[in-house]
Image (cartoon, rainbow, N blue to C red; front, side):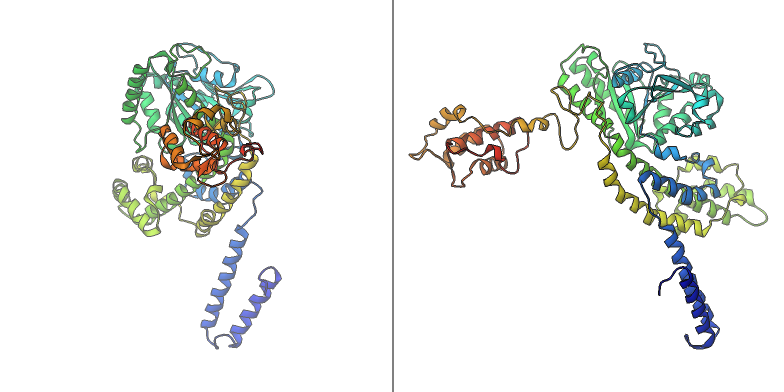
Length: 567
């Protein structure tokens, strides 16, 4: 039978009649219990069927899943007071964003100008702390500056939640719109230079670290700039680096103005940077550091020009790929938020259940707060949760200190089931849409002036790098006359061929490993007779040069490299 619509009603009626008449399991009151269980299974199955919906795109799926399944649970358990405000549709639909951080005069604003190849409205550059605002540089039909208060009421922009930081911050926030092809792919968030001392933090009039945390949780990439001549990490900068915890995969470091020092000095500066960061950023892996001078000025010391070009290509390739990776990042962030909301709901539900009904509530709440790590372990074991999903105990202890645990909401079983369904079914279905959507999104070609490679810049996409991008120039037929004298020296036999042993004495002079030389021989010995003609010898020498230049060998001999009739 088809279970659905009026057919479901008829099946329900039939089961009731069979139980009443004793035709099902025999006449007893227990029959009705069995039928009720069967009917509850039917209703449960139908609710799950209703939960399974089709998504037109990744963005559509994220928006619907958040509003229909995650947001209700967040509201029940006051998630937004503990962690972050509710998400909006623009948080899922807006283009990728890049956050620039660093101490004053490290070149953040200059780097933005370097990327855009033009100035944006309100840009100021100088050795003193010139950028005193958070500026979102976005694409627009014309140059325009939108003040912070006005920017937060535009539902098309993902900045509505910034109102929680008050007017003091909004007066220090603005949007700079300008026409630039690069900004069609992602937006840039320029920030005030990080200063030293507690006094500077208080003078800002708003919680600088909290604002940085808000942006860090929402952007796709965080670029932290360091100046080779300013390696000290101030107190405020240290707090900023610590508060970025949880966004480690987004963080990329830039050692800027590297042309200002010599190669030995650059090595010492890099070592000092790693040593300083090791005391602040508590991660097992070393963060990626891009070394170079990211501006348009002539290089003072060009000893490491090749290194600078390689580093710039890596950084610009990462930026160019942001439009394609944005959907993955948003999906990953929502999954992380969902898992946090899940453990948060179980935590508050556990705290509520453990509270006494009459006396001793204060003592019990203080006891549970002081033993919060033990509470985490109990909940994780009871509900089979990962301890890695639980929030920082110190932060939760501060948040819970003045709250009444008895006022927490109990877990709504149906909402939790919908959340579990989202984690186990809906998110994997969204993942299946990723390859198709990503293939339709082009790389941002405005990063290095275009997608075509040059001797100075290469976008490292589709397996290309500074060397392999020119592989096609090597896959041409060699000129046998260039190698005739070497061939004659090896002493060809009467039929014009050199034996494999003679060819080996010449080929091993390249010092390439035997497995590489074996591949070269397989490509060059076209007729597979164990000997080389002049043309086949030319192929072998050509492929040796190709390999020594760092290029990968083709898997088979290209048709354009096959010998002609007279060869």
